[in-house]
Every structure is written in C-alpha cells, then in structure tokens.
Length: 265
Image (cartoon, rainbow, N blue to C red; front, side, top):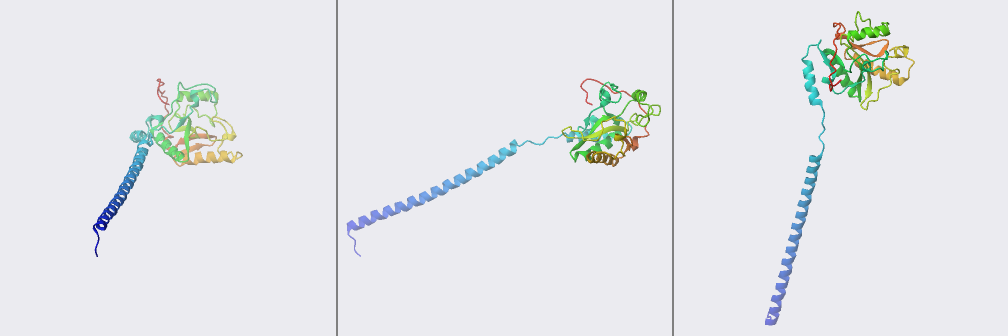
C-alpha cells in the first residue's frame, strides 16, 4: 500500500499524539497511585501518633500498696506482743477515737490525743479482716483500740458494771492490746446502720437483740462473722467490741503514747 508524503506526515503526527496521550495517562495513574499511598501512609502515621499520644497521656494508677506491703513485711517480723500504731502499717482504716473527745459515755476527754495502738498480733489480724471488708466496698472504723489501765479505772468510776466496763483490777482486754471497738463504713465515710451508737448501754446493742430492722441485723452479722473468721470473739452486750483470742491473756499495760505534733493517729 502506498502513502503519500502528506499522509505519512499526518500519520507520524497522529502517532506522536497517541504516544503522548498514553505517556500522560500512565503518568497520571502513577501519580494518583503514589498520592494515594502517600495519603494512606500519612493516615496510618497519624493514627499511630494519636494512639501513642493517648498512651503517653493516660494517667498511671497510683496506689500506696507498695509502701503498705513493705510495712506489712516489717510487721511480720515483730514479736506478737509488741505494741504498734496501726496507722503505721495500713492506710485503709478509718478512725473516730471517741475517748479523745467528749463524745463518749463519760462525756469527758480521757486521751490527750487520738492514737490507735494494738499488739502486733492483733494488728495483723485486723489488717486481714479489713482486707475482706475492702473487697465489699467497706472498711473498719475504730472507736477505741489499746486503752491504758489508768483510763480503765476512770471508766469504772463512772460505770462500775462488768457487763459494760471491765474491772480495772483484773484489767480489760483493751488494756492488753487485744481488743478493739469498731464499726463499718463505706469508702465515702458513711457508717453502716448498726441500730445504736457506740457506747450505748442497753439491750438494743446486744448481739442477741432481734427486734431490729433487717438491714441492721445484716450489718451486724457481716461484722461479726468476718471478725470471727479472723480469730476475734464478740461481747454479748456490745455489737462494736471484739477481742482477739490469741491476745486475750497478755499482761495488762499502762503505757501512754506520744502526742507530738504532726504524728498520725
């Protein structure tokens, strides 16, 4: 087939146009692909950065458990009969030490300052019992702990009735560092309803009182059963009083704690 020079020239120009079009098309496709990959890569990096920043800014939970465990380890090394300040070995108790105030049956302050001491063996049992309460959103609140024997004599003068106050000549288990007066409260500091206040001397405070609201009976049962499971026994006339069996026969003590400024309970 014969092509004139003009036809051949036109064909050559058409070929160049088509070739240019395909080159441009391929280039555009390649650019689009590169651009998309760049966008994908950029998006991926942004997500990783966001996650990274979120992790970096997330508050790490902080607790005092490490320090408390060290203290508990130290407590385990002490002789059972050693007197210890309970707040040195746990921050998970609450204190309302009534005999350092006038809010008690004597209507007078008999402690110079509020401190809670017990024997080491008693402290270990209390921490174990409180651990069970903590799992239920509760904790122990203390009304009284170790009590100097001299204070026992003052109490006996006001209420010389062994149903409520131990004869100071024989001594109370409080004087031996083996008894505590307690209740339960929520983590917000709201005490559970136990039917009467602490130091209420009357039948409604007895453990065998049954004509009380169901909630009160359940609260007392929870306190009693948990404390008994950790070696404590109760007093029939006082729902708040618990003695540690293992410390009940220790010698009566009369030491007075320090009331230096700034010291914890």
